[in-house]
Length: 489
Image 1 (cartoon, rainbow, N blue to C red):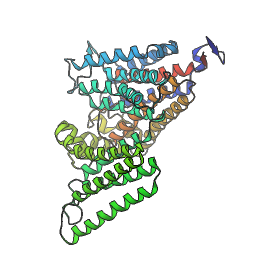
Image 2 (image 1 turned 90 degrees about the vertical axis):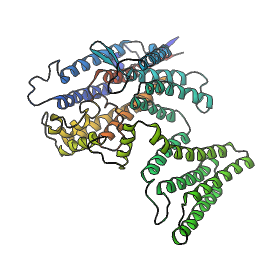
Image 3 (image 1 turned 180 degrees about the vertical axis):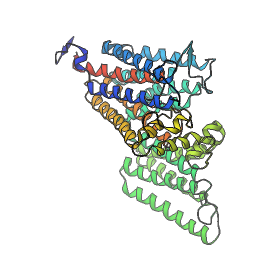
């Protein structure tokens, strides 16, 4: 049985045309950027199909047609066949692992004659649909561990297959779905744990070889262990509502550390890290004691957080030096400022920063960028295309592009929040999370603020797979939103 609140003569009248307008503007500016990035002095025809700018017109045209087809499908199609699409994409990702064609060391591309497709780009919308389908089923409760882990499995399964294709950057994009889980009620402790791990890694690795005063104490290890103790104490206040125990642990940790630090500085120099480990063990033991005496489970989870933090910190250095590929290790060291390597791993970012800086306020003008025309920036029409915007359009053009992306993000938040059904809201926040991750990481790596993981800038980077993949994500959501007034009983 179906009932409509409003008459819907056609899908077109119910569409959010503001979002479509932003989409078209991004496509237009993206094509201009591809022209600027791929154009060489002496070229006579930017519309030729033998040029990248000409081929991008084909990708843009087919994307618009694809978007129209997606809008013409019934919105119930995406709900009904969510699991089927997800299973098909998983199979495609698995098959791609054994793909004999390698492109820059990655097996993530399927080569079909002159056409090259990257299944990981299309698996994003299928994963978003499957998660939305699962989380919108009757009885789902994100606060139940088995339901939360099952939802996380939808994220990690495609990630594992993509990592098997040696495409780590594309796999990391799927972590953005955890932002949606947080919106849907995932405990904030998970998000806090993720942020804490990043802090441990950056501080520990960056300052590992820097020593505290005249002692043999590594500042990186010292600060990280002190943070573990403080974070643990604060979590007792937040999750157990016991301010007295919190201040007791903080006072114990800081005072004991200060006493031994002064002893090491003025009496006998020794490594304070060993004292920090004993203090951490004392804090963890006290938290476990509180849990046993009060029978409050949150104490045990806090103790698990502290133990996991220490294990993660000490394993991070091993992973960096023994597990990661050499080029990945060098990129992280360059990002943290441990290595310069301007002619190697840091070359892309260095040249990109030069290109953006040379654009000034208003830029050098369309097709007048010297850094990009002389091909100083590798991958300047794909992963590093934002440097072309900065060089040719300057600060004003770059700010305009970022404002367009901000408008798209804010519009997606508005559309997701107005969905009458959980399925539409969850899928909308999945789309929002993917776009936010891509824009933040891509622009950040071009500016040298985030690691270079090789992901495209939505609607700007050259290529059909990414453009089609983002079109799938966006227009499926627009079609679901267009059917929001249809209430099914």
